[in-house]
Length: 105
Image (cartoon, rainbow, N blue to C red; front, top):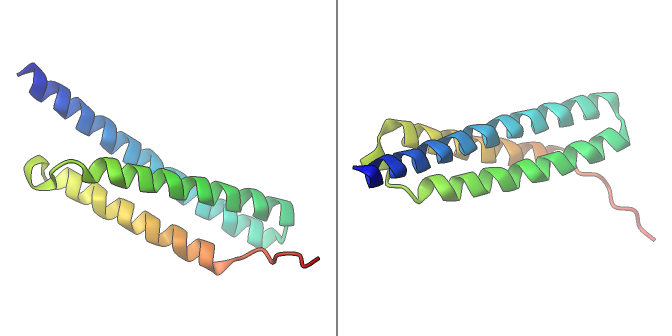
């Protein structure tokens, strides 16, 4: 019984981490869009760094969530997996949308 409760807590923590990763991904995308609109190179660079960090966080959350059996633990995990997948795709699209040109020396 205690082991089952602990396992449920681990799953809840994984879902919370996934939700935080999804939120950070959305914020990073929004920040990049704002920086592009302002055409501020410093803000763009900062937003791109945040985008990279959000990508790592989403990947880590995906790995953690996918380590649990979504068949066994239900619809919430499956929905979270789908949301993480969508967040990862959105981050890729945002990253592909704008690349800072590299300076040639």
